[in-house]
Image (cartoon, rainbow, N blue to C red):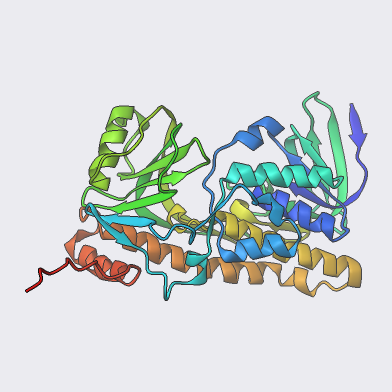
Length: 392
């Protein structure tokens, strides 16, 4: 059975942060859109992903009137002045007086909470969100009327005609494959190490605890009131089988230099190579890439969600200007605008990732780079607390 869907202005492929944010922004701007998500609603809302927003990301949500998506489910980065960094077991504090505003006013918000709330807001406002959309295929993106075909859970084929296609279906999505290989450029930086990422059913206290240690980087980050994710720097060649649960907890304590207050079940593990990836251009014809479909950034930067929101903000404003004023200037400059911002964030992410990792385990980059990284790390931290001298 083949059915022709109702025309819409924008078809958004992907129901993650980038796609759902764009959908909400467009809806508030009076622009019709349809969101196609391959997975079920239950899967999307429960999928655990890293979550942090800088002030830019929070500002975007508030400007579009969807700040409620994080209200009651987030923790301000400056709310806890005791948020520590452990350096070879010594507790230090992040510098706050001269810190970048993104560091001071960042917000911890589990990504599944943000996604869940963006879904709720979009549907509440009458948005068209179609879960279980399989075999999505953007076509005719070089023409004035692109077509997106997909198959639903019942096997029926649907065709949507639109003015624009927004590819927000992630790094492994299909949208980017619609761009000819001789048009798309992929720039990649490999850091040379990975993180063992382990999801646990125990809370994080404090909300984010990072450690620099000669054995490697480590962290425990909140993923809600009853969950946290552990990160342990490891070689790219490591496998999950080499990291049984008891080894994960032992290694975390060794790198923290102190006992972990609570241990519990580890529900999932994966080895994640650290890399930065940028695809260019982010536009081809009537197809616009955003979020992880256009770029990956080192998780050390905690910038993935904020980058996705920036892309969605730029694209939404560009589409609204074209529809309302027949002005394509913002759409024409979409790729250049977003790539400039992306490279700026990539530069910061590479610096931060190298500082935090090179200053710990010297087996990757050597002692010279370790000492340089330690000096750079000191610029991010408050001076060590001097011991009290005895009264004379």
